[in-house]
Length: 259
Ligand code: SF4
Figure 1 (cartoon, helix red, strand yellow):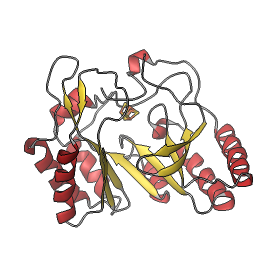
Figure 2 (cartoon, rainbow, N blue to C red):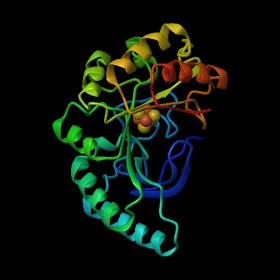
Figure 3 (tube, protein in one colour):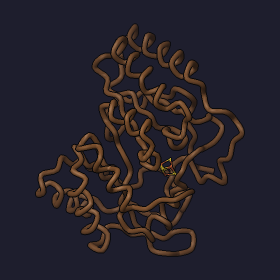
Figure 4 (cartoon, helix red, strand yellow):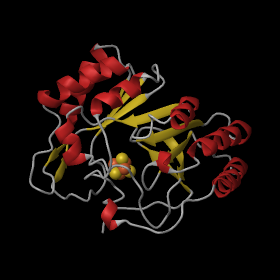
């Protein structure tokens, strides 16, 4: 299998296309993937191929290992630009996510005050007040919205439980701008041979309307960069990403593009 799993609970630092030198926090087990989506492009592989019985790391283990890592990086004079919750699935699936966020922010303030705290999330848990409140505390609250087309979400993101995009958009709006939207644009076919190109007007136009309704502080658009479980997927073209970004910029949004 060519997809990758990350160490747990701390991995990296890695050079992130979007975030700079990023020290990763993986709240999921190292031996498998735990996610409320099952995206056909997920670099960690498909849920059914990455099942694990291993427990998630405890709050204490996460904070102790982060502290040790930041002390070491400080001694070496190479503190990270960002501490990023990412890794083998959905970080907000950890039962003590909110407590961990508080602890990580405290460690960041003490040991690496210039580092931003980022969370990469699919947004499926933001209707829970404790998750919402925790995400309001981080510097970069980066939530996935690949499209506003329900059928496309079923084909590509494949949520494991109830998910309605209109409700997600309403939930995104409640962050009052303290949210960044990340969107994967790509082409190709899903496992059943169905088209998954979301770069056409059919998808981009309604998505831009949703972005305008949400009012995020930043929009991050990107395309496939690593091996995907679905081998029929293809990158969106740079000129297509640029054209989408230009439309958002004309609406006044801060946009980053990763090719
Ligand atoms: S939301 Fe992220 S971690 Fe979960 S399946 Fe999709 S790409 Fe993978």
